[in-house]
Length: 179
Image (cartoon, rainbow, N blue to C red; front, top):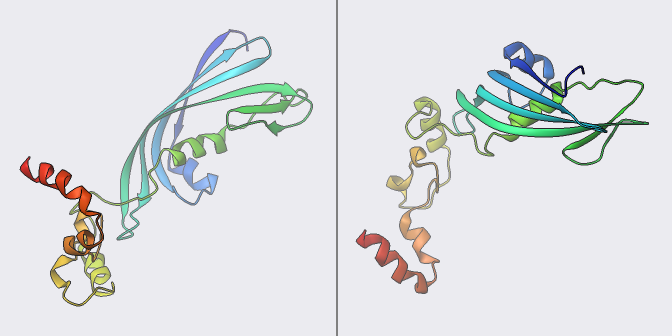
């Protein structure tokens, strides 16, 4: 590097996500701003990632757009052999003098996604929701309690949830109901 600080931009597009062979993301458009700061014995890499990726909904399996807005950092040092000292510190061989950031960029995007990928309420594929409702086991008398669009407690009624609640929470529930 000729300067102490250098900025580099990348575009992670459909081609990138297809070629990286990650399981979670197959399409997207994410802009990356990489700021490299040269220190005496290391390089500090600060990443700012913004854009949108396409991931499958865990409930209806249709694709959904999910926004990505995250930051990450790596510290790259020179050493004898390649090693990952921690999640943020990478040692690369002095003889090599280069690092491929592709997998790191993919991981930064993938780690910014929530564990559950579910459409917003009412946006899931109606046909798939109907099939899921038809094949979901439910207790007798719970016909009206099944609601795929609320995102939680599928096939469980409020009465079922309240049966196991400690009675000491009733005072808090009353305060909530007053609001």
